Length: 427
Image 1 (cartoon, rainbow, N blue to C red):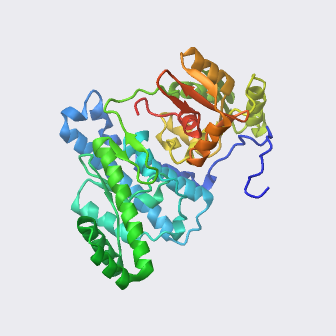
Image 2: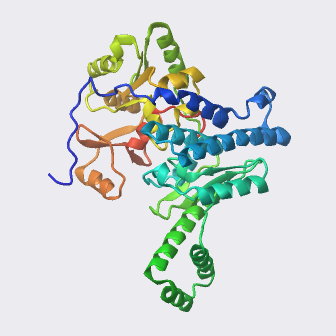
Image 3: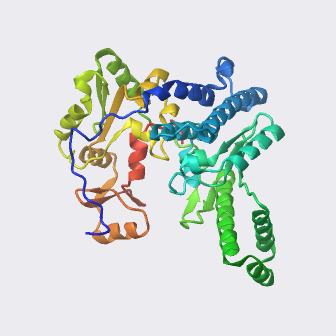
């Protein structure tokens, strides 16, 4: 039937098949990682037992060094994009992964803030993006604000508000929109005037002068300005209303501890180093299987699927590869994970395949044991969520609500993203 996607047939030999970047890019990947994520490594020994709150000089030197490395990594990426090199899918994944890794560092890996930047837009083709004006602004900002770094939004997969996200040597964040051309400058100037005056006569004059295309451009600029204002309010005040969804956003002042399974992941990776495979189960519901490229003739994922399928209620339960974090916009990249550097590149280049599965039946049992309620949603409730562009996860055809005495939330892909992809301990 038109309008409906065909149901995918489950094949244990294909599901979770190992993937990786092109091997010829590994040298470049290591160079970019060194610049983007380890620019401040010379200062790390000084940071043991120190706090930035008590040492402004150390903080400034740390951020200045980190930003210098990020600037060099971004410059190299832009040079390659502007060159005659044909960009493969691996190039795009690598460049976006590095840019995202820098973005996560800038916002201190806070998912609540990343979500305010992300508008669910499709990433642009890097070869089709015009970097001239934003690169010029990056260079100017660097001259005007020594020790700062301006991340180009188009390089990332989740920063979709503003053209540049700038962080100073004191950690202060600034969003910037880059406008080029006399017409755009004139429209931008009028927009600021109209926001202050709300003068209908002035708008009529503008409409007559610039026509329908000018009005459309004015509307686009206004939407972008409102979005930037929303992000600034969330970052500075911890609350705002999303202009695209009308959802009220509030970030609590207190930090929220979120348990992570990085320790278990590290242990299973080391186990794989010794015998070619590793296996672990966390909280009786999250299954981890790690397989080297050589073990089981490269079909370790098929072993994982077979074992996972044998557990009760596993049919229809979600499965991912850890590599998929390079594709999910709001997941920490492999570069950001708290695992050994060599393990990062083993996963990125397909030498290790980390298979993950969440047994939904056992997961719901653990939720009930914690004192929360679990119920199936009615068809009407699920349909209403679909209409609000908040599609729920459906298990055996039914959406699932989890609640306490005060409120309920519906299981969604966003919850699974937090489960499958390790996050920092504090969000």
